Amino acid sequence: MTTPSASQSEAPLHGVRVLDLTRLLPGPVCTLHLADLGADVIKVEDTAAGDYARALGAKPGATSAFFRMVNRNKRSVALDLKDARGRDAFLALARRADVVVESFRPGVVASLGVDYEAVRAVRPSVVYASITGYGQTGPRAKAAGHDINYLGYAGVLDQTGTRGGPPALSNLQIADLLGGAMTAAVAILAAVVAAQRTGRGRYVDVAMADGALAHNIFALHALEQAGRTAPRGEDLLTGGVPCYGVYPTKDGRWLAVGALEDKFWRTVCTTIGRPDLVAGQLAVGDEGARVRAELDAVFGARTLADWVARFGGVDACVTPVATLDEALRDEQFAARGMVVTGADGAHSYAPPWTISGHAFRVASDAPTQGEHTAEVLREAGIDGAEIEAMFAAGVARR
Image: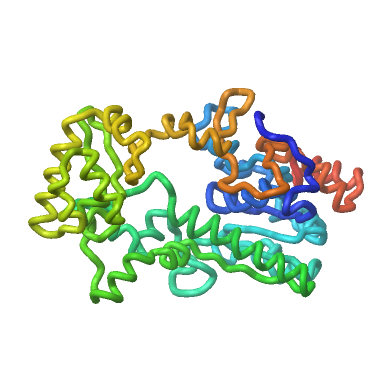
């Protein structure tokens, strides 16, 4: 992988060990961030299919690009936790772990004998995090769900979309990633700091629906100020005013205009040769519709490339709506080192931060299922003969 090299000892989470029982997207992205910060993340998979993200969209026998993107810098152990020997092996690993992360429905880890109570009995300082759709309590705690459901319950979908249209779905999973992965990472790191200070572990209960609701700030602002939320597509930041919205160009592309401040809006109007529209910056109702129609006509008369050139060097909060392949080639993201290219040409993202004294690197690609089982079990003090017996019995896999 083409990334800077750095001593692992420089990594902020060097020496922190994480047992990762999660699958698919929210949990693996949470632990990806911890791994990229230097934690030793051990992905604990079952001995059958393992994390079924491995096969998502992949050809038979291949590992999906999705799995590879969110599981780099991790090790993999495959254990049958339904077998007492597999459970005991997991608890042996837990004795040396600082963090455990799981994403099963409430009650599953208890039935397997690897819940918080079981783990803290062998590791009192452990931080144990559960990431679920609705949390460990409440009437929906055990309900199934996906990102769309959590956003629906949290009032986010109601606010997403265009005026008069249906709720719109984003291809960025807001509840999964903001409400789940990032919220969990913040809470885990806070609990780790507390555990290092006091020696006492914590249980972290993260609900993706809660995370979506807690960040639905502008809609709550409208509700508190006006007694109701704005209709879809009619709030300040959802297309309700001319100065903040997307406009089509001649070639079927789009421009994003975010000129909320007066100085930026005046610059926009000057740049497009329409100073007469300055007064319509925050217009609503019929006047707002008229101004937006004028802007549709102006922006629709030129191609996206023409507008990008015209606004080049102009400080006005006007940008192209780029496709992802364009974003991957963008000079700004290149300057920030945001795109990591593997030896096979596949792309992934670097962590969305830089920390002084620490250079991000891909120390290892995503592991094969059970690739490190023997190695990690030996580290836990399990002798070679017992490990081989577990392999022979199907309790462990390599």
